[in-house]
Image: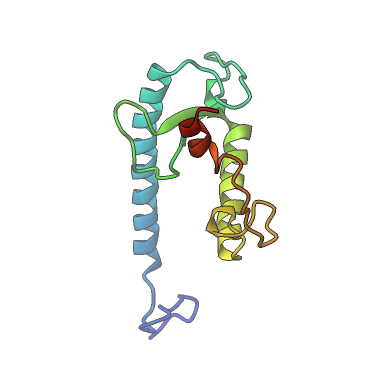
Length: 142
């Protein structure tokens, strides 16, 4: 007897145990929340309660709107000195992640500014070297 409402694994074709999947997801969420609570508490002790982007100040009444942003986007990189964290309000934090998503999309589309294309994305590379003769000028004394 098979349950046709139970999805099948794409590779093996076996039915997926939704109960087990729910338990794994719940455990992962709980672990993430515990990890986040640990570094959030640390960050709130290390840094003033001010958004690092817009400068908005926070107090105990609105502190829930202040988030910890991981500068390298790796939520598992949590050094004790807080060097990978910055406090951002909800809005600036969302904006920061949106910019990162747009950056990844640009890379995927082959338009990365550092990938050889010009800053304007037109494929031209700057060749002018404004300080190219500086060393010779300094050696010549004038």
